[in-house]
Image 1 (cartoon, rainbow, N blue to C red):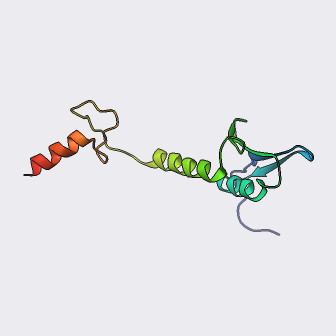
Image 2 (image 1 turned 30 degrees about the horizontal axis):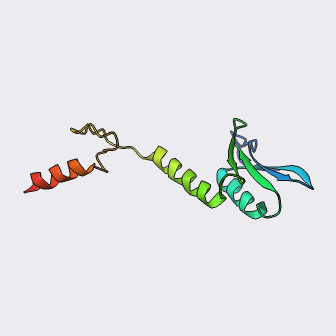
Image 3 (image 1 turned 180 degrees about the vertical axis):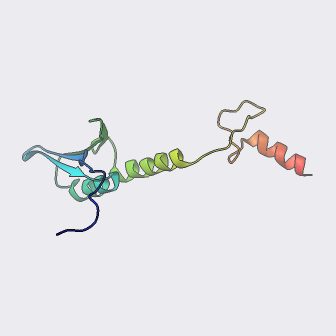
Length: 117
């Protein structure tokens, strides 16, 4: 008789890795996370013609024909990290759209140094 509570949420494995092989056909592996999907791609990428990662919305987010998995994984990590970072609002006096409070443009950096002295 098991004790404890039943899980309140179930995961349907909706991130999938699709293995495409010219001779063996198509196979699909359900993954519980993008980390697992990335590991699955790395494990099978040399055994088949192409590998794809398909997200929860049935969109292909990675194709081995276009990109190396290491490059895609690095970009995915960067995007994930960017989403979790909160950046304080900063209005650049030079209207540089790439100028942020924690990453000033060159002109704002020069102003900051001049104002310190």
